[in-house]
Image (cartoon, rainbow, N blue to C red; front, side, top):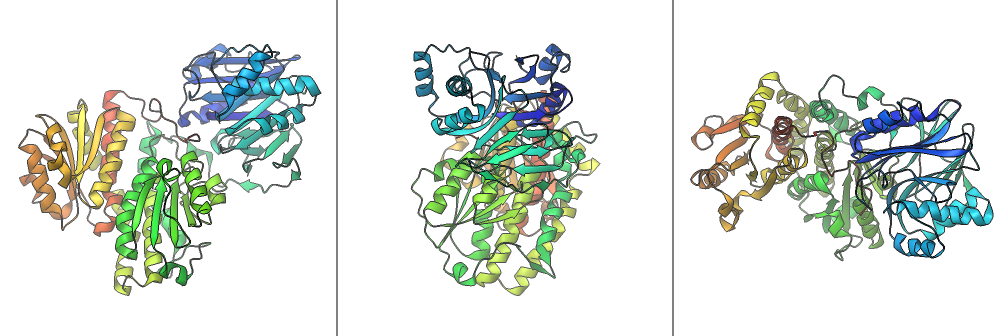
Length: 613
């Protein structure tokens, strides 16, 4: 992994490939490369480090003439970041070039077989095995497509593979399994890519490929083959959002832009689902009988999406009166989960391609559970596999550290809770109306947290605390769930050791970590639990901690009695408060990272879409 672009056309390919790779930088990478066919051979340029290194050695693509090519930004899995391990990889005979996202699980056995046949390898990657395997079959047959198909039958793992053959210089072949890949249809040209932003400058007509699909394309033609090698028709999707949505628009970083987009993104997410004062989930048809017999809900996800599930536990249990268990997708798949026809498995993924989450979804289906996906990307693998899907319509999110995707996923959880509670008759009409009105008010309240005055306040706190080495987030109930996300943000982009604890658990161990000067971030918005959380705050201040509190306007007169500094946020219903309390935590992490000089949009070692286990 991480980013792929392929182009076949009638103009120089290299500048287009490099431009596409630049649009995919947000996914995170450690090296980049391109391969272009020209004058009878496949010509490769690749460099470790940032894309600007590759631009420099190719003079922005001018040194690589040719109208067909493939490009890649790599995030290391097999082999350290280096020029040799960067993609594209060439077969030993120079006939085949490959770029690859994913992991070939049986590459060692295949490599041993190829070594026994005299093949030498230049890299440590699993991908170089693939190109030499294709070359082996091609040497036997002289048939490019057959060689790729035979390789597909042999390799095991996840992949999006895009392949060139020196003997068929007008053709690109691509195929996918458990890793995202799209086809784009242009004017006198065609594309493949791992994500839409790479090609949106050139076309808005895309096909989201399914697992097992294989694409054979030239500048003027395309053919789709399924796993059985039968030709199939594919539906073209029109991309409606504008390329400017994937650009910074005057903001210093994508993350800051996406924080500021949260009011509009939240409103855009909820508006299609609220009609005539009622929640409407188009395409989701829960029978009343099914919901009445519902015995358990799992919320399965990774990273920030999992923390949405942690908030969702409080929301769904309170509204629907059914046990809810958030589970990390990487654990769910292997833990022998208790699932049956009366279980709902709610899977959450921004990209809809998260490998662990997809595997968990398939496991839930295998066990007979009903699956419902919350995703942002139409046509993504998870959206296709789930029994039901609800889209967040958040638009592209470029920064690796999620903000607006988290907020819009929360919005859907709120609406889903209301929808199910009404059918289960676990909520009164008055409670329903009150909650729905409060949800609709949230975009304006989020916007109130993004004023110049509020931003300056949080910047000042960031300047004061940016040198902290250990930070502890504490809260109770939904505030505890919010702390998990706040702590993750600080780890992700500021590289600060940070932990989140339920405030009541301090006395059972974590309090031993508090020494003079330790920063404790206390989220205390729940009216029934404010005093208890403040008691826990006092436990930390008595041991010399610096405390930064997040609370509501309702406690403006109380918070100063305990905390040394605080951020006030608007008050809403307790179940919905996470949508507001998370915003100052996002901003605090952003400005701390800025003060520390970190790479905010592309933090080290992280990728935006994690498509391998």
